[in-house]
Length: 67
Image (tube, rainbow, N blue to C red; front, top):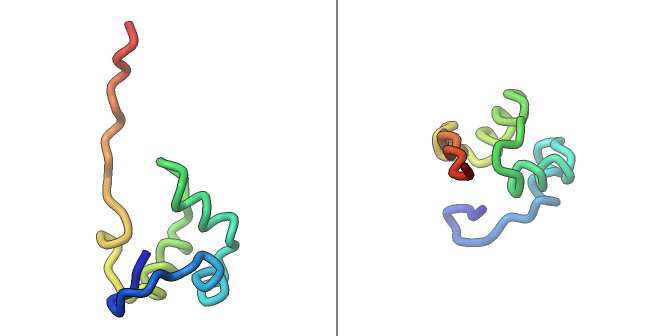
């Protein structure tokens, strides 16, 4: 995660500014399919001053190839 100024933002900084627990932010950033609340999505949009589509995208489930 980077600001337009080109500096990386830490999870601790985001947590302090948004009130979202650091553990939750870590799960959001590392677990594909993590189920986050719309409240947290809104807080992140406000923090990064961006629309929702800049934060997330829909990735279809991968078909099971084991047979």
